[in-house]
Amino acid sequence: MRLAYVCTEKLPSPAIKGGAIQIMIDGVIPILNQKHQMTVYSITDPQLPNYEVKNGVRYFRFPRESYIKDVAASLKEHTFDVVHVFNRPRNLIRLKAASPGSRFIVSLHNEMFAAHKLTDEEAELCVRYATRITSVSDFIKKTVTDRVAGSESKARTVYSGFDPSTFPSRWTTKGQELRKSLRAKYGVQNKKVILFVGRLSIKKGPHLLIQAMDSVLKKHPEAVLVIVGGRWFSDDAVDNYGRILQRLAKPYGTKVIFTKYVPANEIQNYFLMGDVFVCSSQWQEPLARVHYEAMAAGTPIITTNRGGNGEVIAHGVNGFIVKEYNKVESFASAINYMLSNREMAMKMARTGRQKVDTAFTFNHVADRLNNVYMEAYNSEPTPMQTATLSRWGKKRKRKSKPLTTSKRASRQTKRLTARGR
Image (cartoon, rainbow, N blue to C red; front, side):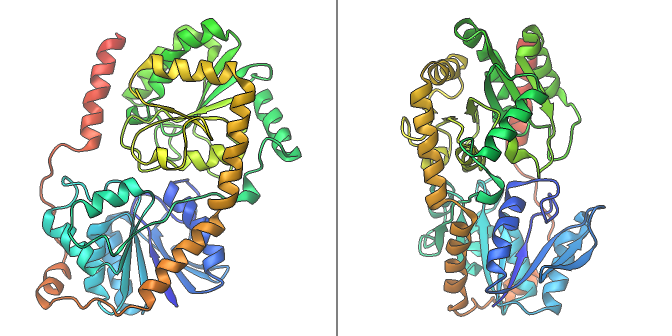
């Protein structure tokens, strides 16, 4: 099968700058390339050539400014049996117009079918011309099936995963060495480390963890909060929210540590540092891949009941779920429980590692994707109506959109700033 991947316009592939989609692609390509002829489209990057063949996989890279236009032109020149469009349902329609003989799959990694992102017409066209629609969680799948009638038969949930070869657990010799080394690097050898890994964004909620330290330190004076990550992938610039975090952390001195951005090829080791990992997401998280990574490391997990998080974490079994996700005291209580009940916490951590080993490695992900690709390959390409082909074969102007998640987050940041003054 001739299979093409169309990444988003946000980050390059391979995942030299991180990104959940890019990391997953890197994980499954070596497996799927043994069965199919693989081509990957992504944006350009100074560290990467515009075209290369690597381990038998073709990589085409185009400038962000003209990315989809260039991909569409390339699809007209090359023939593919299946084209997998990542997280951009609107692009699927335009690319289908460029390559009507191909079967198209769109994978959804967040709420891309929300009303402020797709018009009703666009949502219906995407479902019509997608042979299959995959999602990273049942929560995300429901955003499609609830909106577009008849989409249920095309929708499949394909959970993400991890690479066991790059994620040693804390119970292995290598894992213990990495844990010891990183804890020494940040001077937390004899501390109880509370770990946050992610972008420094208000919707990720690290401000709540800093605020929870007041209560945590009363019970566990040796506790330290380590915040791993920057404002954006490969970006250490400090924005308004970053300054708020620094101001909140200042009274705690060395009890709150910011690592700043960590390269994608090192981030997996940082999960080993923690005595407890906290995903403090405030938004409807599709299903954060940090859950797979923390389970792989063997670090006890606390997460919120937002979006798809609860699909892989069962409360009291392989983690702890905070229901009142926007309350500081809820996080403080959960953290105190995990630090005070070490035996129970480690039991949940071991269950977590067993869970990802048996269901969430990249081999599992590749097998699930391959099943979807074969379903698509064994189906006839959906013919595109002449009127739609004519309209979407040209560059379309975007209509103005209502208040977006980023704008709402900006307003939340302003309110948090006002409280922090």
